[in-house]
Length: 128
Length: 93
Image (cartoon, rainbow over all chains, first blue to last red; front, side, top):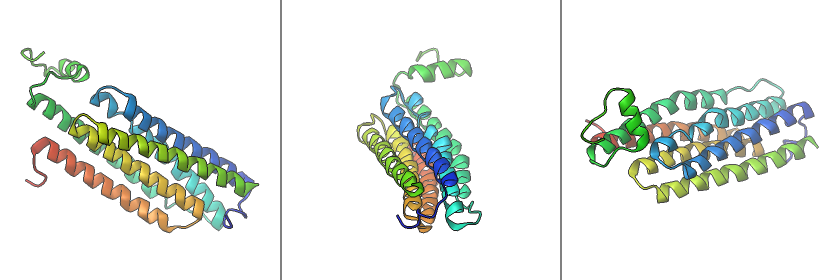
């Protein structure tokens, strides 16, 4: 732990707080992945890790490396930007694929999907 | 004092992220349908990426940042390809 010795207290305390908040939010999101019941509920859970989970850890890393190297280090913001941009794309594609598969397999739509279909006027009266 | 704060915080954060990865792996093994497994794989990629960033903060090594960036990009491409496969049955049309 040699590189951490020279770090001032004003940097290490906020970095630790952001780090623990980010890791805790990521864990809460993954617990939601285990505990929620339907796929359409579960698809919301990991976004906790990709929004403020990644944000908190990236901010902590930026604070720590800025204090460690005595210059502004912000290249971690690339990770944050990439994750923030790509998460909605992947989850929207995955949700659409799941909805097509539910419709194709002839199984009754789950409750959440059925409500969504009614709201958007795409409900199939035979299957409902 | 300052070093021990950050050292303890990174240790706890590594444990929390490891538990998060274990939750994602559980869902990937149990997950009733294929889309559950793909979602769990996406969450696992994000958790592993954050674990590498935390590890880089703990060791002071900047090369973990590049590994984390590559993992986040590969995770995006893998999840998009798998979602497309689930929907159409083929990746490249």
